[in-house]
Image 1 (spheres, one colour):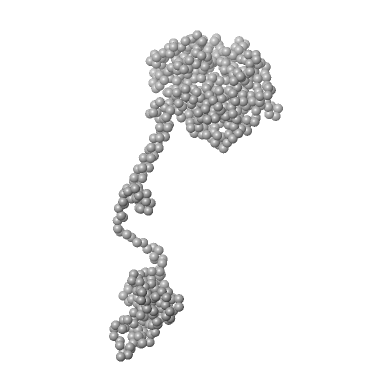
Image 2 (tube, rainbow, N blue to C red; image 1 turned 120 degrees about the vertical axis):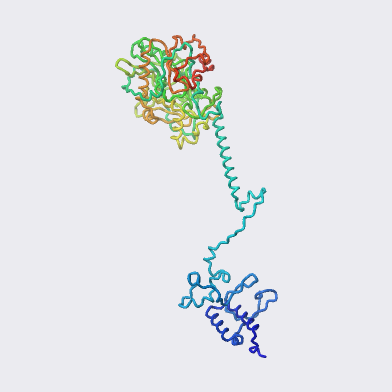
Length: 619
């Protein structure tokens, strides 16, 4: 029986399977024509269609790796993968739902013909199972959703540091809690450092109650009045230009090479032990005594005392001034070994200084160090070639043959009222000649002892951020800078030179270096630090008027160590003399202010300072 006569269903199925393997590579029109022909005439399909030679692969599925048999398949036709895990392609499927494809024709490739929907049974481009690369845009938005719960972590030393594992909510909470604990530890560490030098760990900030009074209040002293600083801010008084009565001493010329100093070419601060510096009070000045006998004025003082009174609202430390009323004249004096002979350091800062007096960074040690630095600085920045500018009289406090520091005393007189004049001894330290014009200078030095206290390192900031350094000093030493400015204004100095002197090492308070020198106009600098000249003279006028109402005798004006106010005490005539022995009273027996100001640190204000008394006894 011939092959064409044996048309049972099994043979037809085998032949159709062969055609299906080839049909996967045929274009749609040829595939459609072949399929229709097989349905109409299966005998012709089996007998007239040449399948071609299909090589046999004895080792597995699909064609062999190397085959010598010729094939009649189209050239460069893609080969569909054929394995047990892959799905075999289909010729046509009339059971699919074509509504979605017809409704959204953009999801499948268009044939470009009007009757393109008739080929829908043969279009498998939207079937991702049969043609996984036919629609890549839909695949890009496809995501596999796994509903399985995440595996439980294996608690151990490794899983905590495995960055690829998903972080559990419990772990995030632990990290937040750990960061919070670290922040609390850091805050506590800063608080410990802030309170390291405090005697009371519970103090939140620097309190004025820890300061001691500059003078011991004695039992026989009678407090007459107390003036709060708030009343000083409202005062104002204008004085005419002063007149020079006399000039004494001699001045050396300023070395302008110091104006070019930078921290990179710093200079070592020299010591001038052979030069004499004088801190003479008002009544011990022979020139002032002579002017008082000549009845040149009613009120007599020095520039240091006047500057202390003018800048009293800015002061924090305690100070005292002795007032003597003799006849119709008034003398403002300072005690021997008074705080006015020293320079305060870090007075208006909020950072506390060590309270131990023998500490090199205590308030007393820094005051002595600052006075020592200022004396040496005022002599080092001069041209020491023997050329001096002399005046009418020599230095009134020096003996013949003594080497005297460069200083000139200007005795000046201001008119306070129609019948009241004030004479003050003012100092200038140097002179400079520019364009054949002489200009007087005042020389002062700011000293850096430890950058940790100020927060600004001068060696790093002076050259690039000099304004920030000055702003920090204005905050920490507002009273000292205001007093220097007031003294320059009283002396009518043309320029005030400020030197920046630092320790060679923060723990070495004997050796220093000069980092820079900057000059300022006193009036401009006063406006910069908000120092009002009218207010300064208003304070002087009010104190003078108050003291002129007192009887003849001796009084002392004391700045309260714990409150912004001053008090006036009447003291015995022999107070503060060499033969006057001060015996401090117990705190409960000391004189107390009125009831409204009695509470809050008064005991500390009149506490005893034995070391200060020993210093006074030595002087």
